[in-house]
Image: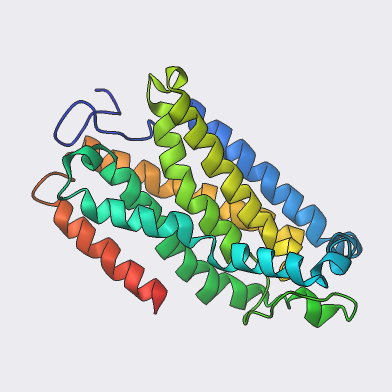
Length: 254
């Protein structure tokens, strides 16, 4: 049976997480976490990287632009994805990407709870300005530093739609889809590394956060495909999944 078969019709978009794609994603994940470990064990290097932006952070216009982007940029993707997911129950043209949007919301909700409620409190790594007196910051968020929740959320949001677009057999012949993939990836990359630019995270925090997004995508993306293959997600049960992800999202926001 084709792993990309649909709930209701033949053009439903999924990820087709075959062995080859999983191995590639796992390889990237391991590479990112090795980089995270290396930089985590080299605090002087991470300090020097943050110092590179110290002068720029003192500039009002630079600080203002990067503060707005790093603090509110996530909403530029998050709000449309949430809106399109719920709209897909009424608007037919969005229905084929419903599970893709569902996964994006599920990842940021569960992942944010995991990072903010467990991992940060487990590692208890202070923010850069708490460890080094010569590190200024554009603003001073609460909580601990490792891992970066923004870096995680940025990639957790864009991985499902990017993988679904790549899985589309015709994506190579649609410049708009290729452009969308590039825009989403560059946006997530800039947002993740903006946490270093504004001085609120170390490089290892960012690498680990991106790796977390890949890990949870592999786990929950595979689970969703299995549920579809077993016909456990269908027209009569999908609203219960919508209710579940809504409750998880509200819990994460609260």
